[in-house]
Length: 82
Image 1: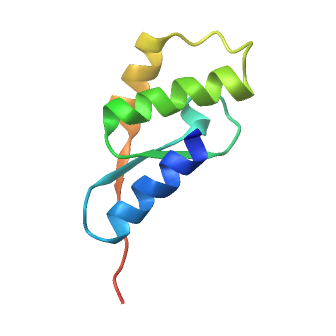
Image 2: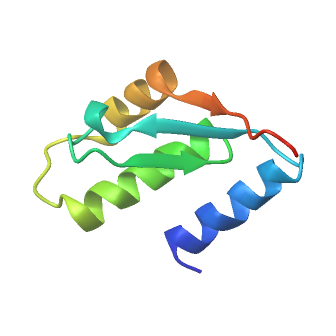
């Protein structure tokens, strides 16, 4: 299962009331203007690392710095129910 499929499953869980989704803007990491989403800060760190390895392999960011960015700048996503 790739990162996009995992993100889609996590978003579905949030929409169905099963979990809290967290997000962080890539402007804090790599300035590519994407938004990364995951079902918690630890998973969001993994998603950010995967994003950087895949899309920005020359980026000089290390896991420790990414972890600090995620923990300080991530936010909750709420979905309105109809």
